[in-house]
Image 1 (cartoon, rainbow, N blue to C red):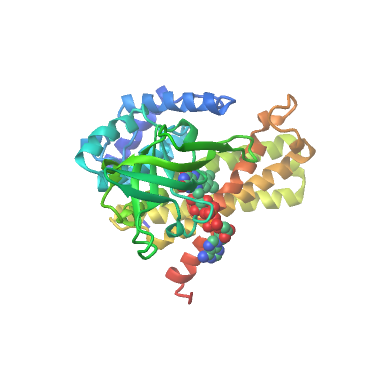
Image 2 (image 1 turned 135 degrees about the vertical axis):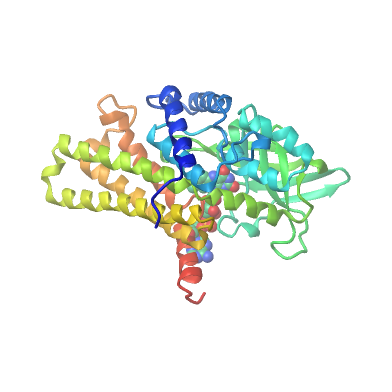
Length: 386
Ligand SMILES: Cc1cc2nc3c(=O)[nH]c(=O)nc-3n(C[C@H](O)[C@H](O)[C@H](O)COP(=O)(O)OP(=O)(O)OC[C@H]3O[C@@H](n4cnc5c(N)ncnc54)[C@H](O)[C@@H]3O)c2cc1C
């Protein structure tokens, strides 16, 4: 492992750290999802104005052409400053790189600038009730009719659909072709007649996801990304960016802050006197250190120009277990007070601990479930039979 940074990387880190110290908003997120969307959009515009909205995009499209190591540094510094996320994450992280790789010049000119400036929010219309881990099983149809396609079917888990101006959609355009070969990828205007969005309430109380229904919704042929029936290759680009390499760097720093705060809670709340809680806390503290070392290994690979490959499944699986174990311990540390949740005047830290614990349940599903990560590790790293 090589723990050192180049002068250029250190300068990149310091420039960003200075900018965040002067500009990152402080304090909790607003209470309602609508207010949160407004707040996160304003924050993205501020990053955009200063040229920090998409460091990983090439300079010609408004990014900084950052190396993989610089992208990891960006995530670490955002987490260290406890800066909020950007509103248009799907646009910046998934749609932008997909359009840069597969879109036409006209599509890039039309859509990329407004993704960056957060004038147009995007959502991702891939998963369906019967197609998640096995995404190629999707059944939403897009039937060609002259210059348009008519889309019918259902998507689910569509994050921020209710705020989105556009969606990136996968739909079946050839029902007779092999599973992966009859799929196309489209840009969809979410205000198109025939599209219905129904938000789903989660255990956190928020409704970030929706079910999205299509009833013969018209999509112009010019909205195809890549060629008709070649959507699986386009989707592979999106999914590679979803699994991305920089996410674990942000999460490690956030969990280091989280575990330190939990230490304070145990000390101040008297939990530290309980030997079982002390043992548990030590184990969780070590988890966060193990994740840091996983990241160091990944960082050395990135610095040598290597890609992480299936090893990134180890980090994803480890992170999901780590965040859930930390969530469980924090509720044990609260003791009976854990029952007083957000909205109750007597709730400790405004119910932040319970919110984190509830949110952590999705870690083993989003971005590839833990079972799928275990399959990848078993087959591709350990060479076990299918
Ligand atoms: C926070 C969050 C945000 C999301 N946002 C979006 C979004 O904006 N747009 C979008 O399109 N999707 C989104 N998703 C969906 C996400 O991609 C899927 O939830 C994920 O791919 C899993 O698919 P599924 O939910 O259909 O579960 P399924 O694939 O149906 O799996 C159900 C269970 O079976 C297990 N399983 C499935 N196949 C195997 C196998 N081969 N071997 C062993 N076990 C298996 C799984 O591990 C799981 O436990 C989001 C999900 C979450 C949690």
